[in-house]
Amino acid sequence: MKPAFGGLYTKIFTSTPYKIQVTHALRERDYVNKLLLSDEAHFHLSGFVNKQNFRCWPATNPVELHERPLHSSKVTVWCAISSLGIIGPYFFEDER
Image (cartoon, rainbow, N blue to C red):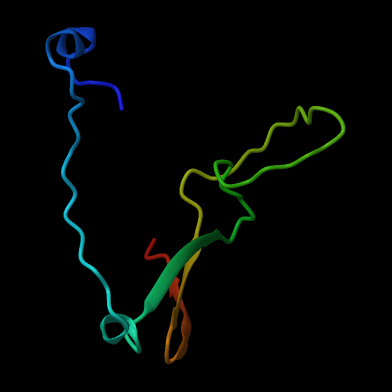
């Protein structure tokens, strides 16, 4: 961990500052039948793919221009997994 004040702090003091983290010890009764993991995804109906979440591995550099509408229609899908089973999927249409 890098000291907050750079090298000056370490020249004056010989210890390193650490942030205190408060944790809660979990017992089996704390999470049995209470576990819920959920996620949502947005799908554009125009076929647009979010480039931050998309990777391709072609043999050559694909230099292509992809035009897309500014505000395309999309569908949001939500689903959850719990200790009791799968919840969903639920589909939500874009309000535009």
